[in-house]
Amino acid sequence: MFGIINFEAFLLASLLLNLTPGADTMYILGRSISQGKKAGLLSALGIASGALVHCLFAALGLSILLAKSAFAFQIVKYAGAIYLIYLGIKMLRSSSKQSFEFKKELSDINYKKIYISGIFTNILNPKVAFFFLAFIPQFINESYSTSPTPFIILGLTFVTTGTIWCLILALFSSKLSNKIRQNYRFKIWLDRITGSLFIVLGIKLALSKK
Image: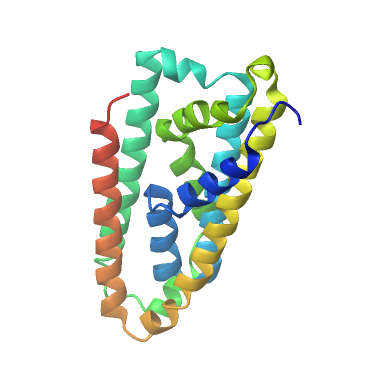
């Protein structure tokens, strides 16, 4: 139907791929554990929104530009790397403010920025675009390769399963935040670890090849 083949296999592969830890998973874990459930859920929704953008680009054929243009790939890759490194440095700097009370910091969290950061963390990762272009076409009949409908259906399926997993991840990991509130020093070290992880992910993305 709609030019889609082996949908069951696609669904199973999507579930397994979504369970594989990556930059998005680390971002959600970092936000959930250090800033609570609401921050974790919004970061997960931000990641999902970014994936929807990639899905739309793939359906419209715009992502092919990244696959064929080395210059476009470099621009998006370095933009994503810089953004991840920026997030990491920001978390490292915030972890040095030991005079602030953790409860007060929680009330000052900018949830809008967390959601937007999640979107850009996903959008500025060219590997996500390549994934949609390389993975989804394997489950589309060649006679429907020029139609956006199967791309959209499969893309939304992948995004839906991924969003469900990310929300579950955010909910469970945020439960640890209650213990963190009781130990501010642990929160500081968690920020440092998470920030360092973002920097490493940014450097890894910058050094990645097509």
